[in-house]
Image (cartoon, rainbow, N blue to C red; front, side):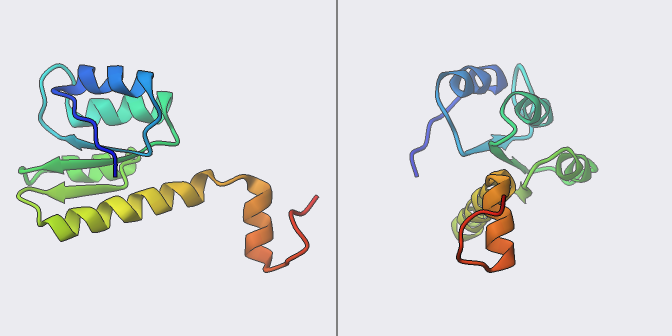
Length: 117
């Protein structure tokens, strides 16, 4: 993976404006914009970008993040293998959701003739 770092939520938004990202892994507590605020902005401005929130807190925000479109909420401290698994799943899940409709119909029907009209 190519990884870019941002020091806070506003810096993350700036990075998102400058290049395409498949995934954002965001801390819940950050200066400027917290992880949930960044999630809300991503859902509006970059809906094809998957978002994972990480936090050391046990809170009701987990439910809100998932309902708000986060692919996962990862508890700190995380194990490397667990975070990588969540990253892969989030990217795969978002790829499936954003695939062109004709491709989805074709792949679901099992046909090999190409996209349905």
